[in-house]
Image (cartoon, rainbow, N blue to C red):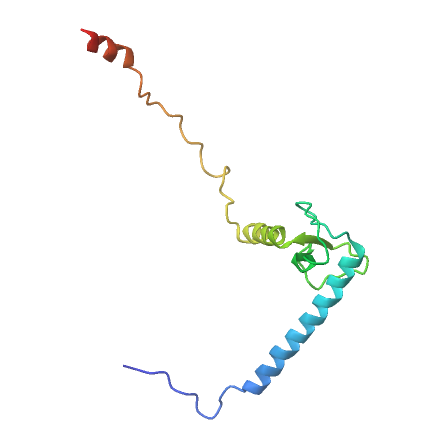
Amino acid sequence: MHLPRKPPSSQADNSKLDQIVAKARKEADTRMVGYREQSLRLHPHVCGRCGREFTRENLHELTVHHKDHNHDNNPPDGSNWENLCMYCHDWEHQKYSHLVTGAGAEFGLTHSKPKAATHSPFADLKGLLEKGKK
C-alpha cells in the first residue's frame, strides 16, 4: 500500500493562497453590493420573469441577473441587469448552462420521430363479444 508523500521542501504556500482567496472574496462582495443596490434603485421590485412583487420583508429573495452572464459587465444605466426572484434566476442559469454544454440539443433535431402506434387492443372486441354470446 502506497500512501501519498509530503512534498519535500517546496510545500504549498498556504498564506499566499489565503491572501488570493480573501482578495477574490472581497472584490466579489464589493461588486455584488454595488450593482445589486443600483439595480434595486433603478428597477421595480418585481421579478422580470414571473411578475412576483417584493416588499421590504422579502426583498432579500430578489436577485440581480446579468443578461449576458458576465458579472463584470455592470453599466451604470442597468441595461445588463434584470431583477429576478430566486427561482427564475436559477432557471435562467440552468437554461444558460444547458445552452453552453449543448444538453438537450438533440431534442427534436437529430432523432427521427417515433413511429405511430399500430397496435389496437380492441381490434377484435366485436368478434370476441359475439363468440361469448354463442
